[in-house]
Length: 378
Image (cartoon, rainbow, N blue to C red; front, side, top):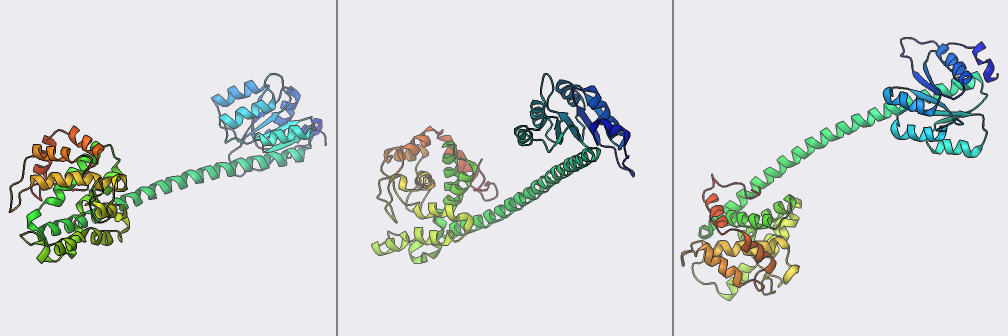
């Protein structure tokens, strides 16, 4: 049946408590708009019409809540394909069906490629129009449903990701508490260096922050600094606590603590990067350190930072056989060893930090109750 006969044979759709879908018909020919609108209205749709693409775009800007747009292709001014481009960009959720009297495969292909979901040739049969409209509206409904589902799924994923992140942070904190207990236990075993792990971690943190390292790098370096001597757990008391000078044989055993600590720590997955600092914390920039004789940038950055912090604490802390020196003298000695024991670039950063920073950090770690967590940057 031809398009001109459509208004004579309309079979209304039956709606049972269903909302009416809204359709916008865009065509520069008034008879086409009138007949199509009459048909779709009688079929249970709410229909509005526009005589041009420009008029349709204005309507959609003011009221975009349409379930379908039916648009002619050949229109004066903005043609249907250009109108389709605007719709797909500004109103991507609205399905679009194009119709035209032009039976050109290139035009049809272009319409589909640019976002149309169906194409009708004029004159079209009533049943064909009904079928295309039903299919297009169902397509739009499913697309909206899918969009809502994706949105809800993303919300669920974000919520669960937030919970997982919170759980991981709680787990990380519990790990850090365990590490603090391990480090404190080691300090208690060697009372000569009590508090050393916390102080040297605080100094390392301050120096690493001054170098502009990110939060994850700071956590890794702090853990490596705090656990640097963990391998001494395996060092015999007779050597670790010996008051006098160690023999060459005893010194060789003492030096094993770097590798022993590394082997202990690297087995814990979240400490693998920190383990590299434990392994290399006695290396020197000129290659004269131990256990591997690493040189320059072969030494992990965290270990090069730690080396300065470790020397700073060693020189300014009291020992049974000597009194600790001042931070000013320790600063001079570190400057003197720049390029040999220490990375000169890190020494420059160290020298840029106000000297009172180090005494303030030492004071903050004097008591266990007042000391902040060594794994939380200030």
